[in-house]
Image 1 (tube, rainbow, N blue to C red):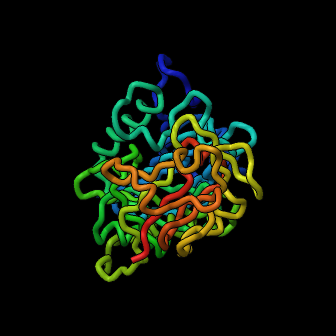
Image 2 (image 1 turned 60 degrees about the vertical axis):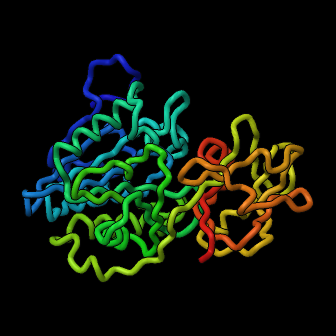
Image 3 (image 1 turned 120 degrees about the horizontal axis):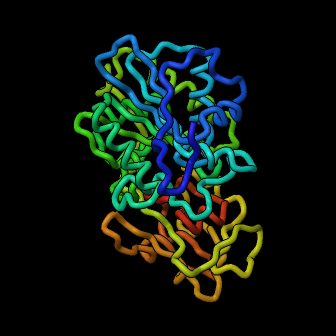
Length: 346
């Protein structure tokens, strides 16, 4: 099998493995990923061959719960309800030491930002190839398994909203985020009749995240009638979140006291995940440029920072009650992606 490689190499972008037997699956997860050796699509025949369900994971190399769930199910020799595609993307990233510590490799784009043009680099071509494969299959549903960048409870995300999306989310969690932000993520692809949801299983270091991935994926792949009673599903819904982002050219850190960075997140801020924070909640120390280092982008690209936050005695504080999620204490992720997502309290 091939490896994640630079453009210009002639090997297929995706390895394929059809119907592996349980005794062909290495016992150890790391050995399993080494055996795959590169982006891989595993296909399994289902009891009902008339339709296909898809599960994707490892679009980020530091989010292992989905890969653990797939590995466990394959070793158990489960019989899926329908034909199944299991997609494991950034294998080399996951295997780069320390194991499961790199979101992406230096010089590479974030794979979960590559599902819209341009497709002119390796990650883009990998994404475009998967898009084309899925379009040809016309699957019944797609779930994309991730871990959150900080500790916290599981939740689902969708960029389209319907009872099927709620039903898929409910296999894994009771929380659903409905977003109109366009980032080039897998969940934004729109195949007619095919709901797509992202499942954030919780933090990569939390044992319960692995349970969420395994139990939810098992239910997703084994349930004969995927959307039976979908209309009855009730979820805790978060509509149209925004992102608090660090502007280009500024520095961020995380500490229990102020640093020389333009923004210093308070240690322990990730404990606010999915909690309701009141007006005046302190989140970070600000440097000489104050709030000029930050922005809050809405779905139209506008900056609404002053609507939600203010500076008080050198600290970034909430201007109104908010619900926060995907809060990270990892400065690299905060700088290259976002500090967290937010919605107002209704």
